Image: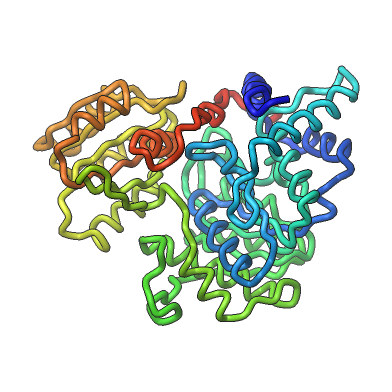
Amino acid sequence: MTYAEALAYLRGLAVFGARFGLETSQRIAAALGNPQEQLRFIHVAGTNGKGSTCAMLESVYRAAGYRVGLFTSPHLVSFRERMQINRELISEAEVARLVEQVSCRINLQSRETESPTFFEFVTVMALKWFAEQRCDVVIWETGLGGRLDATNIVTPLASVITNIALDHQQWLGDTLAKIAAEKAGIIKLGVPVLTAAEAPEASAVIRAVAERNHAPFTAITGELPAEQMLGAALPLRGAHQRRNAALAVAVVRALQDKLPVSEVAVRQGLTRSRWDGRLQEARVGGQKFILDGAHNLDGVHALTAALQGEFAGQSFTLVLGTLADKDSAAMCHELAPLAPRIATVRVASVRSLPPEILAGHCRRANPAAVVSAHETVTSALAAVAGEPCVVVAGSLYLIGEVLELLGLGAAAGERGLNEWHPTLIGR
């Protein structure tokens, strides 16, 4: 099997949508000898901040000399971003080998069993690779939710919940308490729980689940004093990242008896941490770009705070694209007044909100702004080509496409693998 054939196979699994439930991933893992039993995990859930927290944890443990697996989603440009060891992406040859081996194992099973979804297959494929590569620890990010997410077949060293906000309400629940209950589903008996959830109703749910599981509970409040601790600003910008950093440091310290890390390694890891598409700054052709995957209202709150704080005084043009299931009107209400020029764009997804609707939200939020709607990102970037500073936000899918077009990421043509059918099964 070639890499192209492997990607085509994975693309074909997208027709099965997304599934709530652990049975299929458990079945495939068992057929592969339960590779998760050979590994140690830090399981990370939450509404926003999962990827950034994972990136910081990975960087700290790598600085301490560990062989660190990293599993995240979605990818920005290349599918290979989803599985990394010591921040080296899995190779094309390894992807092809693993897809062939796992698919053959599935085909040997009864034809009566359900076909895995894309995410279920990739989750177990990652387990197999990390076990083969003898990772010392795997930083393991959930996909959607937690309780019934395919990643939840592991028993980790720590269960980490970044924050709780309204997102994916149609599947996770329409209140913070309901969403918190889904995220808290990653909590295991006796396994330490650490959370940066700020909303009292969410934190209370997480604490209650931890108590039922006799799991030590730690709530992180406040931000990491980066200048004081590191002697420099945290590379990942924004107050929300300083909160994520405080959570990551608390996790490292809670696991000192199992994964010892020196304070020097903590500092080195944090100062070297990187995570593309989160207040990422780049200069291309004389223009400054700030790329941020603020894909829901909570993410927009964090972006707005950063633009008014750390980036205060900088005038910018906004390129905005969102998915239809987001509270786009509220997102525009907060972001649009900050920009005199706005270009809305269709995200490369069947779930995209039409740019004309998004433009209407922006005009109502900022009647003085010059607003244009664009069917392609290429058109939107051309429209703002003369602007000195451009903020791109609204969807990680959009960020990935812009990274490709600006030459900041290899044009792998693999962003379509992020697409999944909006109907979840097994709920």
